[in-house]
Length: 116
Length: 124
Image (cartoon, rainbow over all chains, first blue to last red):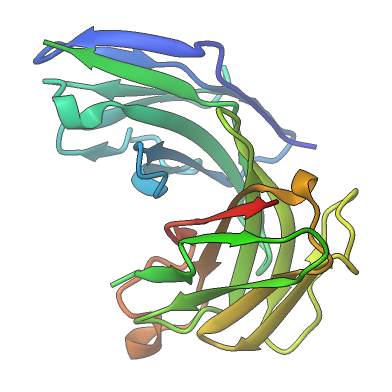
């Protein structure tokens, strides 16, 4: 079974600075998806970024980028120019590549605080 | 595109009663819907998966007779908590994914789950 580990329960960053959230996973599959979801205080899960394992290029969405190291099974999220609105719980998630009922496996989350 | 709604957003009920929570995909046909439960300061725990036209598949340890799931149409799934007790109090979240293409996909990506805003259930 796949597992997702987020080793940082809490992180703090100053506004306008850069922060990196860590995520490692364990799988025996070669093709899969990886996601970062954000859950603000409203508790609405918001997709931040996604990565297909077969793509070597790291995904980027505006201020958010990932460092995907397939051999190391690592998938970290970098937030540049942090804003107050980035404060939230961040969940790393894994999904198998095939199958119409593929489930997400979530990590335990990292709470990000953004300070002035 | 990719909007998923839930109703109600907050419900309080008495112990022993049943509560129904609705999850709708507003602008795409959801071929698969998922129901999660989230305790305070914890991650999401998958309860069940429902595909169009078939019965829900429950995760190990989830009581199927207590948490009834119906994927009534391609845009609606319901979760009914039967004979609710205080320990059922939690935050319930649904998500949806589609394998349709074109207009039926509503601009969604076929490999991404889109989440509803959640329902807070309090059982007194």
